[in-house]
Picture 1 (tube, helix red, strand yellow):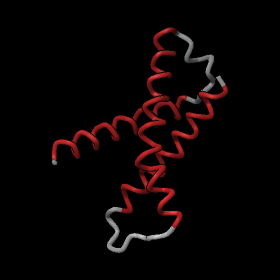
Picture 2: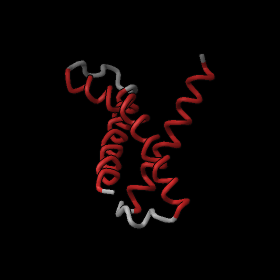
Picture 3: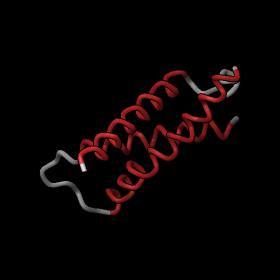
Length: 98
């Protein structure tokens, strides 16, 4: 269960990178350096895949009634699920625009 807490925190960090990446697209001159590349990878690739894994596992734990034993704070669960909904919406909209 400690691994799920760790992965939930990793998903939160990836989701913060996703948020930074989303806001950086509106900048007139986005930064181009190694840190931007890391944020780009964690924001686009890491956030979705880690988040979908965590959301599916936590949903299964919720259905079988063992979610409380994991020890993940409620705010972290809610934020990760909200980010997952936003990511699915963005992927859906980008797929339909092409």
